[in-house]
Image (cartoon, rainbow, N blue to C red; front, side, top):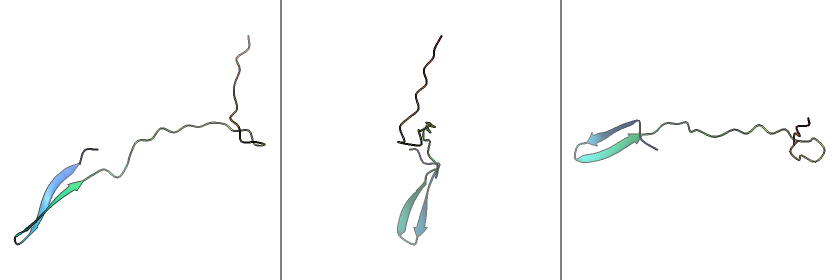
Length: 48
């Protein structure tokens, strides 16, 4: 992950590097329907 901002803080002779990273991340959401009785996934069949 790349930092949004890079900088530093100095106190006299002490130098502290700082990097700011985003607080969010991307995640893939999956909305599966589950059968209530045994929590197994519901499958769909296409019938012609």
